[in-house]
Image 1 (spheres, helix red, strand yellow):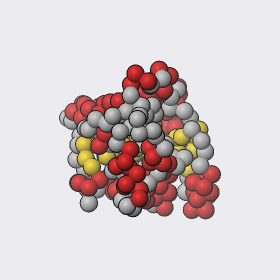
Image 2 (image 1 turned 90 degrees about the horizontal axis):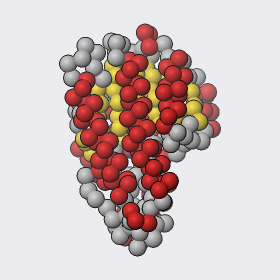
Image 3 (image 1 turned 45 degrees about the horizontal axis):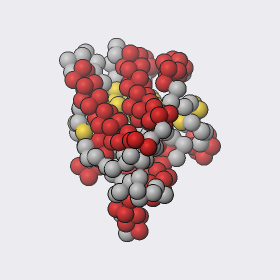
Length: 251
């Protein structure tokens, strides 16, 4: 029996990851702002347990209660593996920092960085004595290494998630039943987030032409392709604990 907690599942990469996990009969706990009816129907058709939670990760102070509910539905003693995939993320505000709204900056940090930190903390608290395969995959971005004009919040939070991954990996070393953790940059995926980027004003995001060209030239990766790479990280023995890896490094 395998369990997976996945955030940001209403669309894009998160939805694609959940589809592949359900096909493998992994019991999925889906966390997103809005329900994904198609995933719920797929789980019913497959006869696979699926627990959707409508939850706004911006409300970070309620994450402990959320994880209490998630783990109350698990039989950890009978599990072979438990996974946490911190996928949810937001780009806004996409504009120079002096024009960014305070509320949007706060939400960005909560969703992209604080929520994964709290979810990881709660995950580790509840599994530290469990002798099973425990893996955490933090979805990162090349923006965590490279600054982009107008992406001050996004680049900063992704850099933060990379460092957080390295710190957690260090803390898990030497434990009797350690969790494995990795930060994974999935490349440029053809999702609604990319559409959001293409609708940005060039004066707010000076790299706009590059992203327009990627779409026009058909160079965006499909969510299903990237989801395969994410799911592979949950199964492979070649898991770079504490690593900050890109999808082109996992081919």
